Amino acid sequence: QVQLVESGGGVAQAGGSLRLSCAASGPALNKYSMAWFRQAPEKERDFVASITWRFGRASYVDSVKGRFTISRDKAQNTLYLQMNSLQPEDTAVYYCAAKTSDTARWDYWGQGTQVAVSS
Image 1 (cartoon, rainbow, N blue to C red):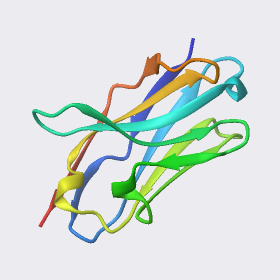
Image 2 (cartoon, helix red, strand yellow):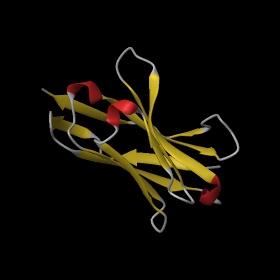
Image 3 (cartoon, helix red, strand yellow):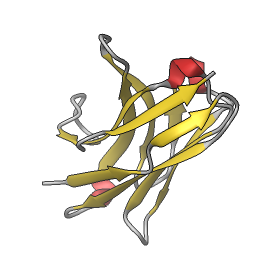
Image 4 (tube, rainbow, N blue to C red):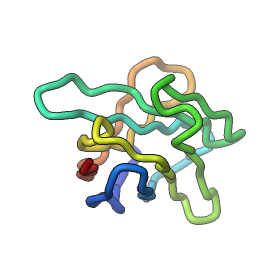
C-alpha cells in the first residue's frame, strides 16, 4: 500500500514557475512507477508525466515537454514536478499517482493540489 501526499500548489503568473512535491510512503517503492496527472475544471483527468522509481526513466505529454521536469529523490521518498514557463492552460488540480511496474492502472492517488496560472 502506497500513500501519497502532494504539496506546493499555488498561484503563478504566466511565464512563472512552481514546484510540486509528493511525499510517498510504503514498502518497495523501487517496484513502482510514479506520475503526475492534472484535471482542469469540467475536463477529464489527464496524464502529465511519469517516472520509474528505480531507474528514473521519465516520459511526458507533448504539451509540457521542455517546460516541466519530473524527478524523484529516493533518499527523501519524494516525487517532484518542476513547472516552468507556466501558461494559463496549465491551471488544474494536480494529482500524484503510483502503480506497480507490471500493471497499466494507476492504483494509488494523492488528494491533489491546486495550480492556478494567471495571464
